[in-house]
Image 1: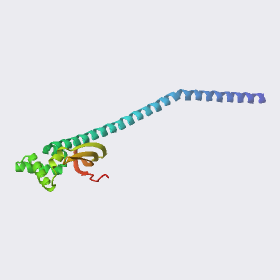
Image 2: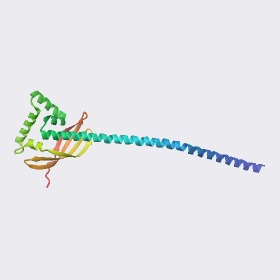
Image 3: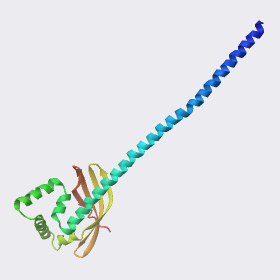
Image 4: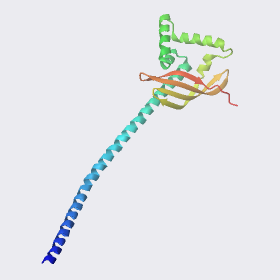
Length: 194
């Protein structure tokens, strides 16, 4: 009996081990869909969050570029119409505000002050009608480089001087102050194309 009983024990032991292993595999299979659903749900939430964040950044960037374009259009309008109020609305507030104050204290019309400034500049630029040059000014925005709160706007500018048309690059240096964009400085590329 000793020889056969140990075989039975072995068979019983290996049979119970096999049954336990099968049960464990079944449990794993049963729990796998739940884990997969949780992992899938987490990944889905992560993808949605990333889309929302990056989508919001793109929309925000488009709005900022549109606001900059509006300031550039307002500057063009101010120059073409010699509108002092429109010009003061888009230039550096640290320059515009004192000019508004001086105009109010002197009781003078801002457009008259602007025209007298052009008259003074015209006397320095012999043979050039600066008012006519500004009225002929057109430009097209080519590129906006923005690093809040600063922006550099590259435009192609066309002006007519004494009946001759010139096209040059005009760079507008802008800054966002209290939620609004202003032209802080400008620079025109006066190099000669050969």
